[in-house]
Structure formats: structure tokens, C-alpha cells
Length: 153
Image (cartoon, rainbow, N blue to C red; front, side, top):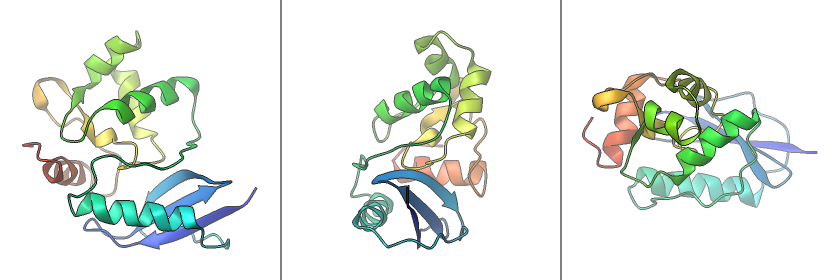
């Protein structure tokens, strides 16, 4: 079990990517604690895909993912991954899909260890309201990501 990390620049500031055993496990805002491990082709691919995403040239990430979370959180994250670039769902819509409550969906969004890659920013409150965002910069960052995808926020 070998964890590697890489800090990459973005329009939102530096992001730190973490990979373990050939899968992405985390994306942290800012310059996270660098883990001494080899720079891997997976981290380089993730960095390139983020660069393309922020340039508006990548609509869907194609990376092996292995986020740590509960079964419920993983269900919510799978739904997030199914929301196409430039589209949104509400906490209530996602909750209905898995017979849960909107607040629980919000909790799973906040626990997402791979923001941007698992697009929790595409989940909104009712009537197009922002809801929260656990990423650095809070809802301002969420709005910037939505606008990048052509969603009027």
C-alpha cells in the first residue's frame, strides 16, 4: 500500500491529488501534506485531466477512483458521477433516487473526498439555490465550477 501525492495549479488555487494502489483517493484544496511516494503516471493523468477540465476541454474524468466512505456516501457519489457536465440535480432529487433525505445527501456531498472529480458542485438546493459547498472558498468556488460548466449560478 503506497500513497503518492502531487500538487497541481488550478484557477481555484493549488490542489493536492492523492493516489493509492493505482486509484485516486483524495483531492485536497491547497497544498496538502505531501506524501513521499513516487510520482505516478496516474497522478500525471489526473493533473492533465484537471487542466483540460478547467480549460473547458474535458467533460468527464476518466480515472480509477477509490474514495473512502460509507455505503450510503458511495451511493450518493455514484449518482454525482452520473450527472453530466453542465447539468445539475437537487439534494431532494438525489434523495428520492435512493430513498433517503435531502439533508443526508448534503452530508454525503460534504464528505466527498474527490471534489471536482466527483462533481458534488452539481448538487443544488431546491429552486436552483446553491446550498453549501465544503471546498475551499465555499459557495463562491461552487459558483465558479458551475459557471465553468455553463450553468448560470
